[in-house]
Amino acid sequence: MRLLFAVFSGTGNTKRVAERMGEEVRKLGHEAEVYLIRKDAPMPAIEGFDMLVLGYPVHAFNAPKAVVQFLKALPKSEKKMPAYLLRTSGEPSRLNDASGITPRRMLNRRGYEVKGEFVYVMPYNIIFRHSDGMAARMWKAVELRIPRDTAAMLGGAETLKRVNVVRRAAAFVVRIEHPAMPIIGKTFHASKKKCVGCGACQSLCPRGNIRMKNGRPHFGMHCVGCMACAFGCPEDAIKISLLNAWRVNGQYSFEGTPAEDAEVGKYCRKMYLRYFHESEELEEGKEEEKKQ
Ligand SMILES: Cc1cc2nc3c(=O)[nH]c(=O)nc-3n(C[C@H](O)[C@H](O)[C@H](O)COP(=O)(O)O)c2cc1C
Image (cartoon, rainbow, N blue to C red):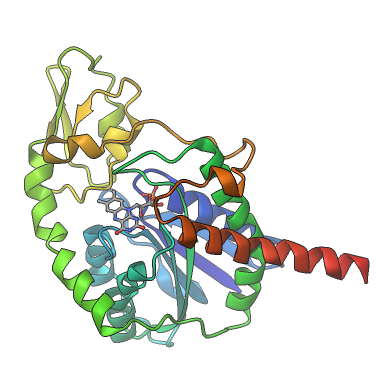
């Protein structure tokens, strides 16, 4: 089987997970290609694939606007190609499941058959910074989930999430982010003191929304709030206007020692612990198998 992972990723979390899943697909003897959804990337030749995996980060309980635009441009599938959603989010909240509604509807209308969804918690790239210990524990959970999820996906398992009315309504209200972000993003700017004019923000922006003029970035009207610029700036020079108090800068290290339960903070503590423990039960399952 040939799988296409079409992935939108602002700060690399979703790309990292999709690449890991692609590796697993290859291990199982299939082909996997990761295509990054960027303004400057030509649409891939979809019909040469047997399965589509759409990867995206949750933005305000929804799929980012860049994903909706990609789906509008996606060629129809004449052969009812099976499709899965793969998403990452900063917290393991069921509210995030509402972000699958629009991609599911759009893909089904375009002739794809959305069979399931896989969700992974990865560190926040806005609002607050997780500790590297938390990032490492999240990555450990991803590593444990991927073999199970990949096997399920290749076997055509149905893993669609149910989304109740309350979650749908919450996601609908905060979808205001889609029209608001281009306006807020237009007012992003670089600190005169910190910016060295390196242009990293311009090359990181998946929307082609940043132009360097006189050694400073200028922001257009195509921002989707992915945070690639502010997160990836080597000088932490990008001010994200109204959202500046929520700015997070600099890559996480996933390789350190995973946080212990006692180090999991108060914020959504129960949810994170449940997600970690569920993932780690997969490891215990493997240990049992080895013993037998
Ligand atoms: C504008 C914006 C809104 C976000 N909203 C949510 C959210 O509603 N729920 C959540 O759990 N995480 C949210 N996040 C966190 C991201 O989903 C998470 O950090 C994701 O792994 C980032 O993936 P990326 O590095 O591929 O862009 C948000 C991030 C951004 C930038």
